[in-house]
Length: 220
Image 1 (cartoon, rainbow, N blue to C red):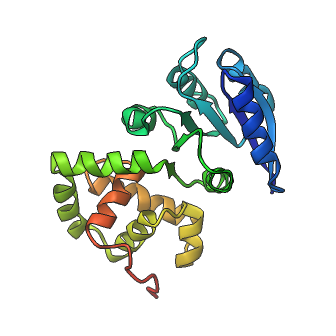
Image 2 (image 1 turned 90 degrees about the vertical axis):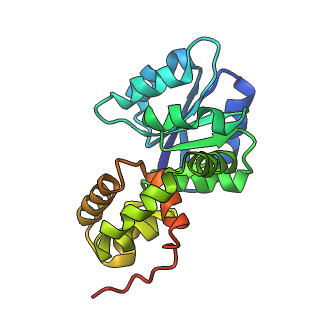
């Protein structure tokens, strides 16, 4: 399957660079590149699977575009692009519906990998953003509280949480545990609720902090 990607950035040079990098991958097609003002219409017309969206643009705020795109009937997966400190925007972007936060200087092979992960339902965070998640939890103490709540999860939910912590998408988890995609979605929704309404990225941090990443996945 070819992954259809839209690139939205106010700088033509940045758009061209990203298009060149992604276009070199045989399974990725950049179907449109444009500025923020044309983003919503471009997404409606070209229906990309993944949208790479600049977070700061002069004509329109990237978060505004993100919220508009997220409200569309068949919204693409969105990853925000930034040249600034990723942690600064992390909470806003995740709460607004972004599935990832990437630096514009991400290495080409990592960018291609990120698009593939996003297209399969996974989440992608720049290292700076991941560090900010951990720092925030350490500062607030919420990781300890959430880790204690892991005790209320079923054994299967713990397995699923461990694989979420490894960065696997729901489809990858389904394959790993020989479950249906729908069953995995139900498990993820249940465990996130039990952990106190955390999002997927926060739950991954909890899994790591709770030492769950190496839980074996061979339940009968």
